[in-house]
Image 1 (tube, rainbow, N blue to C red):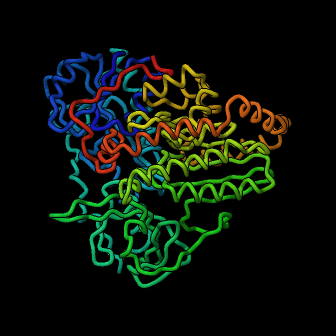
Image 2 (tube, rainbow, N blue to C red):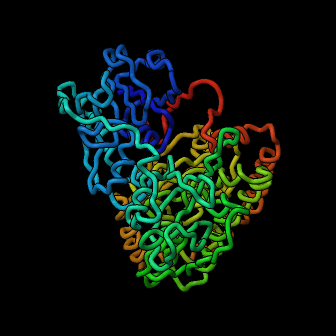
Image 3 (cartoon, rainbow, N blue to C red):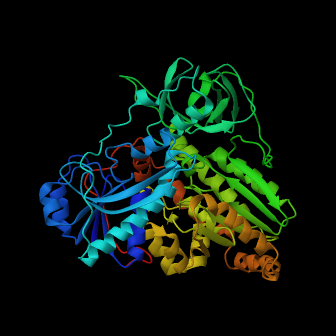
Length: 564
């Protein structure tokens, strides 16, 4: 079918719908619909067989709904109507939720149901839930709905006429009462607002939005008291315990623009009082229930280096800390080392928010790129063991190249990869000119970079970008990866591959040294980073401040790699 996706933004769910429908043989075009856009005009340019709205706040006009099959993807079960559906589900602590695909109708959310799929709601942040369980259910529901539309025989099911339409979930409902709210309540409020809009709160006499929420098992204090810092996060006491808050954003005022979402201690800057740094060892005991963004453990001859940075963004500091952890892991007597393995983002490369907040964004960009390069170089030059990148969540730009530095790349089936830099106006680094062609060939590497389109895990496996696709629920990926990696470490094939690695690296180095790849990439990057008129700076600013990057619509519709 010729399918038109209408969406507010080309977000993770829209990208996944686009990529996976393409994998199933459909011709798919995405149109980002700005506020008050001429939806009828946009649709008229394409004349599709089917319109799908995965993430759309604009109303689809009656003339469009009457002329084309038009389906809306709603992140809630049948009968749930209105915005903030996932926010409410997490805030109220429900255990099961769902996704409904219904016919667009004049009354928002009241159309006949084409498909619905239930999903579990684990105790995770809203954004994590949205990219994983909600997205899995959405894709299953979308595929089913598309099949039913194509059949021409399915009759959609009317919704209950008395279903309640919920209003937008306002900040008054999210407020934390630090004096009386127990830890579990605080966590639900924080998780329900991540990654937007955050929980508006008063901190050190100013208004801030709080992002993220993680349990702390030992530190305690007076309710609302700031207790400690760890890796840029703040620990704050609740009525009966404490929570970790990794990110903050200053609200701003009538004459002051809102701040950027940043690591909490960086956001506070000089306002931050002197607090103890509650360091956590890399090999944190399994019985500890506390937050840390980098952990290491071993199972026999297999090491597991897990990391999880908010939004998948890696600042200069994140990169240097992860490099130090990698060097520690590399010193351990293991034959297989697994990077990642968590349930959300693997990495999205450099931290654009931290860069934008820096006194000199060009210098910070340069430092961040070089820190990423140092990390990737350490992985590429590891020749005494096998390294596996385990992607339980999406990856983009330099994050994809970090994954490709390993000997094998394993992805959960729902992962979406964006192995390109062009949309941010960058040439890219992280040794992509070595790693990407090595895996997929020069022609496909060039096409991936030029098309700048998302690639599903299944399509990535088909072109050699990924070695293994693990079909698992989000919460089960880590355990499946662990079992596979432990088995791999015990195989004769692994020992043979390790024995051959050093010679293969030396052969590649003789053909073209890694230093030459880095020098060439960084020369292209430096020319952009230190040119204040380069598009990168405007695009970065628009991205982090949620502003339009330029005028006009953006259509995405060239066939994706693996799509048809």
